[in-house]
Image 1 (cartoon, rainbow, N blue to C red):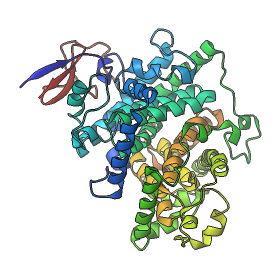
Image 2 (cartoon, one colour):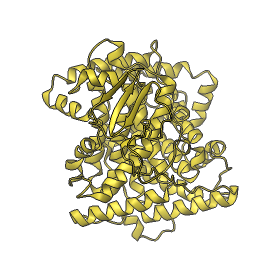
Image 3 (cartoon, helix red, strand yellow):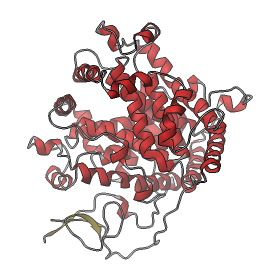
Image 4 (cartoon, rainbow, N blue to C red):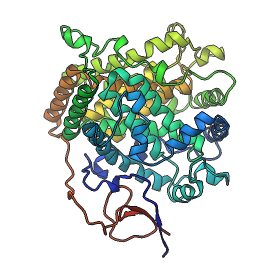
Length: 512
């Protein structure tokens, strides 16, 4: 058994000996159950992965973008957080911003655990391995050896980047657009480097949003978020401005924030693809796939999912939620969904008008699966998908109420958006953007005192109806651990150092 010590230039969770994660691995959502498997090597989705890999190599010709991708490849909290200094308007450091640092570090130590199981389960080959080429990093050969020991799906770098962006956008909501834009770019860098496929990145951003949702159910996380927000306000002078609607009469007020108070997705997500590139080619292929599903049982569900509204969501999500929901049976959960999804949905109004994208059934001049809806749908743009925002934000909200059912809820939320492609009302890129916009909006409404109050009411109602608790269980770990102890990358002690990567004496150790 050969043991190779690697330089400790990284900052993985196991190196933070004194950090207590908010949840154990078993208490976190299982991404294998929440999200689809990575595409196989014979379908249209893998063709898109290949085209995006080629696109990534082209981006290396831009010196500025190449330099950013190289920086983003460094697996280190210091390097990661430094990339958000300018978007945040504040330098993040252990000494100058200890509360913000603690929030970010503890959150990432927690959510980093979520990538371990799917990486091992799928063991997907990385692009540079499949093409027998080198990646774009400062130490390519060393990084290639290390990366080759774990699967490509999902992307750990992307998870850290998008989770950090969501956390910072909650700390500094007035700068959410630039923060989220940098978080999106961080994941994109992994395609440019050649370490990940595009489908790894797309799925991971969704997984990061799911992990962020789970963090919200921890009392310790909520307390640390308050400290981080107070620290940010003290250092910058930028106060947390209450929502306009928080100062209004609550009865009959559906929105936690006005449309102008919400993040502007035109500033943190790309425009819809034009009609000549890789992304639109994928849109067309996915449209054809959707048509092939219409005369199946999946098509029947997509036809049903064309129904828009909280009443339908409660009907369809009751089974995965574990409780029959209705306005009469669960009034507090109903109000949470009505107010929460209305607020999240408002994020799509301006881009729909701004881009005015034509829907698939319009471009191909053929009927959708719901022809009776076409006249009304033709009056507004295709990008992003409002149905997808409703379905994904509902899944996030209900998962926060009952995190034990997050796996089934998020899987149903993903399916609800996919139905829009099958119907022919939306392109795949509309749906992808809708899920990310919903996650950003979900992060925003956590700044509303009225939302937090309503969430507590909904959680209490769920507990009363089911006898189940939604409370968080803290993890107890020693404050100090002996340096001779070896740890896995998820931070758990290793009794034996079999094949894999471990942390020992402050250094990464490769055992082959």
